[in-house]
Length: 196
Image (cartoon, rainbow, N blue to C red; front, side):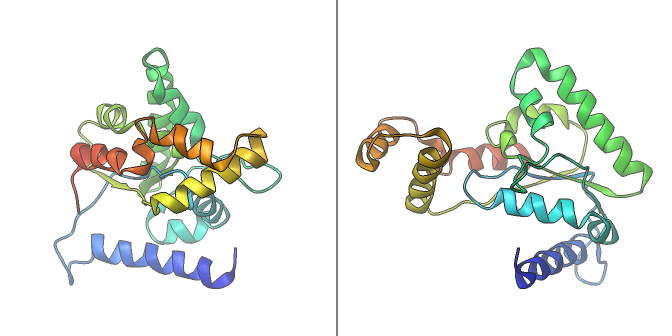
């Protein structure tokens, strides 16, 4: 990651800390959890890599980012083990145990829990249920739908050896619900946690 991008991310975290916690600018709002839920193809892997490599600096800003694995290309799904457990009702207890461990570690340090996983993208309602009674700030990024479509197609060609044409891929997406391209998933997060 280029240094100017890394620096910008730290500054943004510092700005978020000031905006959330500075009595000089606004009433003090403390969150128990800040969750980054994606969206897919919107820079999540770069954020997760940065957070993982800069955990000490992030702690100085008031956030605890639990460790997670990365692959040989420095790519990860962030806290995807947690996110994937949250998907199915039969593994909800597993997700709760993982989350409770993250939260316990954050609280032991007196910090706000910061988690990131694209696997949470479609899990707004389940995450709301899991965090009932906690003060949660949900953050997601929305990428231009055409850019997302092109990037998704390219990733499928590279990683999954997709052989259909881009035209056929577009037709398949347009004939589906395509919620990843409409902002519908973001609306579910807004409905669950509010807009700010």
